[in-house]
Image 1 (cartoon, rainbow, N blue to C red):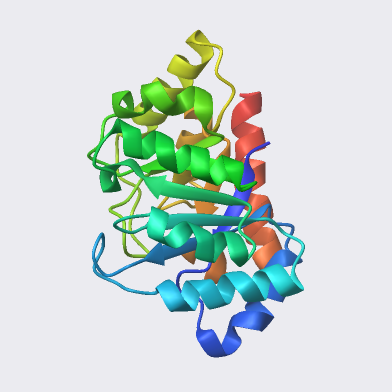
Image 2 (image 1 turned 180 degrees about the vertical axis):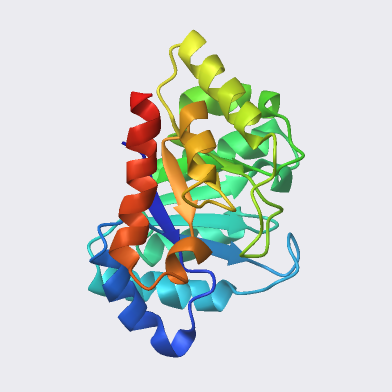
Length: 227
């Protein structure tokens, strides 16, 4: 069964604690923190996401999945490790060379955090191949990084398929997370292509029933798997 990570990108600050509690009871698998520095993407929400991460760590049992959409990701690792992150994804596009990518991976792992690499829609899967044996997950962006509520980019399923096939052919056991435009329709293409974790924000946040929205995503996966 695919796991569900819920993005808190558009959660209103005054309602945040109630939302965190209510969404956790919907049986999600991860809280997903979209962290932006105003440079790698236009919006800057670093301080808010640090605050949200600490709040979730203090009041919830659900693991925290941090997605760094920032320049110089190493500058942000310690803050989110200290706030309770279980897994941190950094963008390969934010690294100047392979040595920096490997250094980031080693630093995260040595500090007890699962390491993940994120790639933007225009980045080819081949850029990741050298690093796959050393990381826990790949985060494939199915929208342009930086804004919530975007539509799933057609053709993302082919990228997911390509990555899954490469991993199977090379005996690499890795999670594939897909982030952006996920709903009870697009989740079918994502999971049938090989995704194991789905990030959903607006689809769940705008629902009147969080539990039903989460279960709908999981049930769509089950139905597709049985076809």
